[in-house]
Image 1 (cartoon, rainbow, N blue to C red):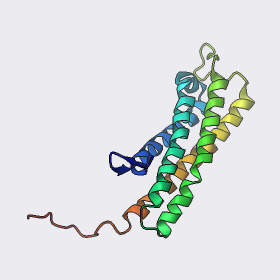
Image 2 (image 1 turned 90 degrees about the horizontal axis):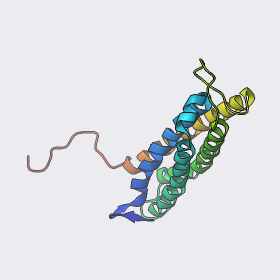
Image 3 (image 1 turned 90 degrees about the vertical axis):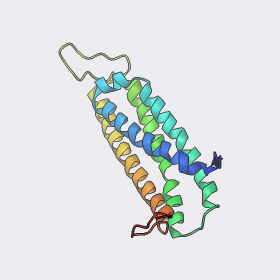
Amino acid sequence: MSLINGLPAHVLLVHVVVVLVPLTAVALALAALWPRAARRLGPLLPLLALVALVSVPLTTEAGDWLEHHVERNALVHRHTELGDGLLPWVLGLFVLAAAVWWAARGTQAEPGKDGGSFRFGMPVRVVLGLLSLVVAVGAVVDVYRIGDSGAKAAWHDGFSTSATQPKGE
């Protein structure tokens, strides 16, 4: 996929990644630390993570096409290198989202308790919680770094620091 409605597909698809990866990361962290949230999210959590996972290679491939159609410089090269590193983080989000959903499904909160539990008890909950937090933070930080480098690559010479008058005034 290279163009969508005459625009580079990467420019449009990147918005899916920028929204879904952090959203998935937050949902995963909440579900891993709060079993009631995991039960409420149900299969939506791994489904959200799957859509985020599929969107990353589509966006990366569209970015590879775009890379060959823009002026090559160090900023574009840096953005490309950073972009290639996101897939493992999002794969981790997906695997952990599936694990958290599977561990939480079918469990019920005890009467009078708000939190409930995972079917495998506290050790599994702690491990899933820690891994989920690490991967969620890593994915969000990586999305930020990639987006920042992409913005710098796209806009480094594309604007003026002083305002210009519109034509005709």
